Image (cartoon, rainbow, N blue to C red):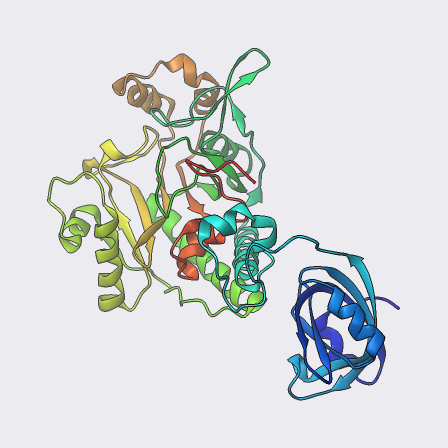
Length: 421
């Protein structure tokens, strides 16, 4: 018989079926025993009364993998209203070592470092697995939203010849006897691809060799990037991003049942100078600290009923050299961050698009033009006004499910201290 999943049992009442999965829990009572089998969709309850089968069950351990052939029988108290009776159990693999934590509890009773040390096991827990499902659904929504807005998905190199952004910390590697680096952004490539498809996006890993040991930073994370041409300024980029976020949230809810916050049709926006005042920061502060972001998140919820708020016009000195300045206030940029529940999850803005502007910008920051030759070449041949963004997927999911640490929603995180498993 073909294996079915736990969620399909109700369609086979009084039939003999085959299920398979991991032993989630055993309950050995005096007169009967219960075997709870976990598969990718949920739990199945197996009623064991036959002495030989009970003896077999007593020898098995949690997380062993079994196949069960049994009859689907109604039982209102069982998961899904049915249980499996008269089972025959076949062992597919056994666990003969102690588990580092109990898997049948509603929450894992282990510290986060312990969970990460045993990631292959911890990720099986429904709570940890749900976070990864949400990430997958958010990514599917991202792709769907951009595809319907005429974007083309691209795939850019992750080994590059120089740092993507001047002054950024990069991971160096030996590339056939000459230096190479892990890309900390697809920024240069996605801009050049605007000259090919006009609207492009990418879902891929990025690498940041920054010694940040916080609950919101990773050395490797998944970046949801996009770039679009023929814009007037950064506000066009923000409009497309807002639409994209709305589809992402709807897809998460439809795919996982997780209730997501409403994305306003027009997310409230404040200029950086105003954001400093709202956040209680000094007027000459060049950036927003986490405390300022939290204050802005509280303000947006209180004043606008929004979990989201755009902060626009960051100072040019805090933005990369390719950022387009605000024509009316050259000291500020046509750039933005999107805060979600008081934390920055998106950085974006309008880019420079004329070759001469790039020469001036790089010269101003003391960067040699030769190091950017392949990048600058695209602007010699005509590029439209364009802009884009980058979303940190893990940080987005962490804020969405209100996890305290971004590592809780990352399958196998890489950070300042962790390169295994």
